[in-house]
Amino acid sequence: MLKHDWFEDVKLFTEQLVRIRGISPSAEEVEVARKVLALLGEGGVGALYTACGLDAVEGDSYGRCNVYAFLRGQSRKTLVLLGHIDTVPVSDYASLEPWAFDPPELAKRQDQLVAPGPDEVVNLDDWMFGRGAADMKSGVAVNIALMRHLAHEASASPLPLSVLMLATPDEENESAGVMQGVRLLLQLRERFDLDYVGVINTDYTTALYPGDPHRYVYGGTVGKLLPSFLCIGRESHAGAPFHGLDANLLAAELIRDLSMNTALCESAGGEVTAPPVTLHFSDLKTHYDVQLPFAAYFYLNVLTLTTDPSQLLQELRRRAEEIMAQMLQRIDDMHMSWLRASAPAAALHAGEARSGVVMTYAELYQEVAQRIGERQVAAELNEEWQRWPAELDKRERSLHLVHHLWQVSGKQGPAVVLYYSPPYYPSVPAIAGELQQAITSVMDAHPHLLLQQREYFPLLSDLSYLYLDPAVDLEGLTANMPVWSDPAITSRPGSYSLPLRQIQQLNLPVFNLGSYGFGAHQRDERVLMSYTFGELPQLIYEVIARLGAG
Ligand SMILES: [Zn+2]
Image 1: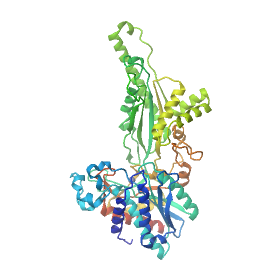
Image 2 (image 1 turned 90 degrees about the vertical axis):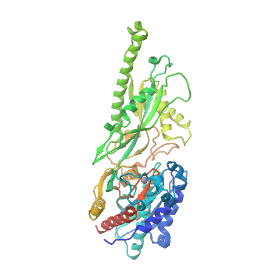
Image 3 (image 1 turned 60 degrees about the vertical axis):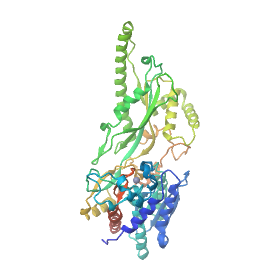
Image 4 (image 1 turned 135 degrees about the horizontal axis):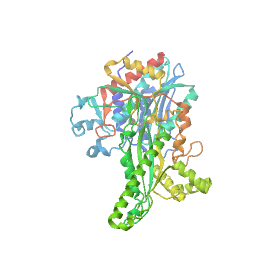
């Protein structure tokens, strides 16, 4: 295999891209997209692509766009190279924030970024610091260098296969770029009669343990759901707590059980997900008073490998029922001992044991619809929807809808209503096939790099939206997500939807063969230059060559 020298080009492109801020969501991402397109075409190379340009994200309030470049080869077989051009914010840099996008200046201040430790970098000169250096302007730079090189080759004689590069905004936010990208991939497939073999994402990878010498290649990707809990207590004066139920106590008991509980970790294909954690918790009071808070809510970040939305909801309902029963039993006991101490005569006439209910949003909806009619429920929810501005956080809008439905139901707490808030990232399994074979044989050809393949890329990424397992029960998601709207029917301001049908039409095998670094989303973010700028593009180049020979 011909070895090409990629290093200087990829280094230059990376640094130039890092220098343009691209925090998502913002209009800065448009600048990065323009720069990517300029780098792809620099020096007359632009004319060598079959097609290239910017593709606007439909209805995007920041005017953002994807960048793409396409080389039609001799065969329909097409590899997709994917990367994202946006970054997370930079407040974590604190006093170094002015240089967050300036690798040379950060390099002068390395000692403030990296605490010397046993597994720390042997040679600090091999690292480039900066927001986006590892996650993942360097990965985009690799794809640019590959496309430029392939374009030159194609100008001499057509490539044996077709290659399409796609660079997306908004990956660190809501993946608006790749949703648009799905449509673009379908259009290009139609227009050029293509057969996609799969996608290689060049996103951030890192060590899995201190001193880990491996470089990881992933097939498939982790998914995520955001199950949410509306906890209903019972109103009462704080002086008579046993007449009511503190909704915060109910929420706290649930959180104690669910958050960081390894029993909820999932393992498959040698991967284990991180345990769930809450991302937000609050009661619904807006001012001070001496009533017991009678409604509270929280949502839980749950990473998934094979569990689908219906299965997760069932498991959470089972746990919530158990927790609620235990808590009510304990309150019954407390009540009794308090009565014995404060009013022994009353203790003889203690009331019935407390009971509560756990239900899903879909069940609550059904119940209310049966009572007041489907049209009336829709009207109630519509009115609640209209009360809030389109920009309202989608988690908050979800809460208002569920809480309103609860109020319309006329039901009494204690209760837990389980529902889903956006976003939803489907997990994707590793898929055998031509691309998998090509990657494996290239890995085998470079034993000195200690490449290892694992299933499920462990970070949330755009890859989730390029494949959708036909076996996934989506009803469990859509019927329990109050802000869901079917993209085929309407796109309502403030709603959430995914182009599920289009994703299923694509269903690409997904891989991550990407940059290597440390500290993504942290101030010590840095990319290992020798591997990422030199070895990585060569590896992908060889995968392309093998696909072309096959
Ligand atoms: Zn990334």
